[in-house]
Length: 573
View (cartoon, rainbow, N blue to C red):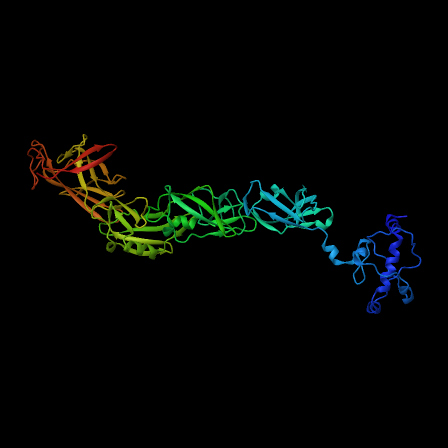
């Protein structure tokens, strides 16, 4: 026999009579709405009744049975017997009885934010009716899933427990929703707290320099597409760059509005770096390398509060602006005043990019005085320079050759201000052909000879010529070719000659003719006096000369300088 039935049998026999009396007293209206309760004759009258169990109503109760019932007892007595008085629902079916069961309320307190890696505790407070046993367990949940271990709860009427937030949450940057549940005994006092937000903020702002493809870049940077790539940041926050030079922050007024970037859901962000750096260069010499310090700043907003997180600084070097100038000079030779041709090509190289200037750009720079042509170290005026097009990237610059013969230098120099900038080509050389040269007869000691003798062996020399010039030496009055020579790379032509044995006494002229590589012919004359011994039976005075002692009138002296010969003409006295 089970326990439930045992409790029924323990009811007093008097309870059965009370039930019958109550049934008899029920109003007729109640009887019309539902069957009148009655006790089946099969119930054992001597059984003990359980006050918690409501008697089972009979489906066949009759008026005659009701009339024979004992008069209804008073309501307090009925309740004390566990029986609901007439007009009241049995105790087990009354909703107000359920409301009397103890309940609880759980409240969770969580910090609004915490820094990643910090220890964080949540506090759960459970309250109930005074005297209610709140024995049970508390469990922390994140996004509806249990995290960490359950914590025992003990208390009467109210209880408070600490729930450590596990490092799986506090160690990862992000926004979380935390809640907690209380499970008690009996289960009617179970409760759950409302969700509370917890934002885990980054402790650091690690970052690196990358290009547009996310690849690491080195200094000096080789592309304007450079970003500060940061990781482990709070999604939705913003990050911008601050630029410093020489320990001083560059004002936002100079930079303009710095561009910021939003942190993606995975905690990464790419902040543009180069644009603010370029703007800081101002009026400095941008041809020099510039070094800057860059710091990333994250703005972390939690509710109505915004905090900032600064990164460690990194040095960023921007290579100086280079403007290589290719200068190709036609070395000549040129006749004095003839246009010297220079093929000029200017290109701008900076941060991995090269831009070649067009001929019109070169012309504009020359006209503006930004690109100057220097000849022998002196800048030509723009009006003295002509510009033509050689190809899409090259201009031909021409100017009048100097009147001075010999080697000359030319250089193209680009000069800018605001910001300061200077770039120069290599120095080119060109040659202007001489219109005159020096000539002389020299003895074996290198001394100039103006008095000649029959059969005398001398050296005929011409200097100051273009290399490759053809030179002839002819003795007049009766033209006699003494010899020919070609000017070497030093512009000197020399040949051994012998004075004819039949030269007549008196004045003679050495005519030196030089034909240069341009086809131009130049002539120099050297005055000579031929001396013939007086006892020479055939010696006759020339119409223009005599056999007197030689007169040193002037001439040329050949000096040995290093490994070359330099001919210097002395002025006549």
